[in-house]
Structure formats: structure tokens, C-alpha cells
Length: 219
Image 1: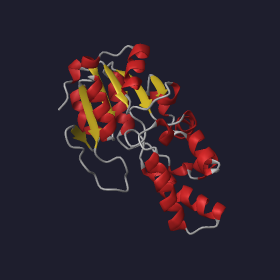
Image 2: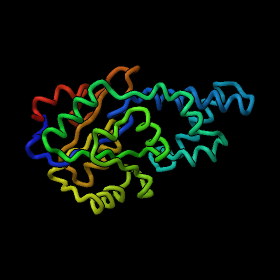
Image 3: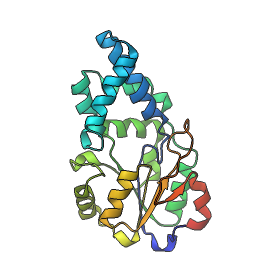
């Protein structure tokens, strides 16, 4: 599926790729609406609908991923609310074997996440993901998300990856399309980002549901 001898750098998404997306889905679809409903004394369904409208308005933009933005918009202690359900933050079962195989094969492994730095630090605290990765990057330091070509331009200037020798792994079709547009040669889609939901292939890309199936090829 992938020509591993041609891949020197591996850029990895975090939520839904290395971590189970169930935490984030539960946080935004259940936990936050409950806090919103309680604060404004409105029905839960109304809170869910209002939050969805606000989400849709900035989807794919950096604000969508920004905890500071949502803390201000919703007037809720977003980071505290995340900590309340931090027990749901989990690595995928296949993540550590995959990362260790990449490192053993001499690949440069870099996390590139749209997640806010506060969210990234909480997830590192809960998973020790940083012990298995060469560099952790939050796109907030560049002021744009992975959906933007500007992100890839700035990232390439900073870390110097070569498009033809780079693999990018993500669970979002718009983000994969953005990386493809920039010219990154090797792309891999994660078809099962949320352990509580059925797998769904992302059309147009090589898909995986278990990184462990790639390990023999990496070696």
C-alpha cells in the first residue's frame, strides 16, 4: 500500500489518528451541551442545536479548534470541563506499536495537530504520547489550521520535510485534501477514528483501521 523505503518523515494527526476520537465527540456533543443547558437553564436538545450552529459557523477554521475562542463564545470553563472527563482520553490500541516501529525504522516522526496547546498538553499528560514522537506541533503556533495551504508552507520552512519523502496520516478528508494539494506524496486515511462508531472509508485515499497491519512493511 505504501512505499516505506521512500518515506523519511511521518507527519501524524492526533485526535482520531493516534487518540480515540470518542473523547472529543463526547465532549462536544454531550458534555459541553449539558454545561450550556445548565448555565442558561434551557433544554439539553436546545443547547445541542445552538452549539451545533456555532460549530458549523467556524468549521475547518482555527477557531473551531481553539479553546480560548470557545471559552469566550460560550462563557464556559472549557479546559476545566475537559479535565472532568479526562478519563476518556485514550490512545488507540495500535498507536504505540506503530510509533515504535516507525522509530525503529529510523523515520522522523512529528505530530501535527489542529488541537489547542491546552488540549495537546492535557492529552500528553494522560497518554505520555511525547515519549514516542520526535516533535509535537500545535497549528495554533502558526495561526492557521491544516485545512490552510499557509500551514503547510510555514511547517515546511520550519522542519524542512521533503514532499516526495513524507507520509501524512489523518482521519479528516478536507485535511488530507489540503496536504495533497500542497504536494505531500504519501497519504494515509484512518477509517475508524472513534472506537464507538463503525469504520467508514475515506474515498480517494489509502485507508487503514489498524496500524499494526503496516508494521511488517515498515520493517
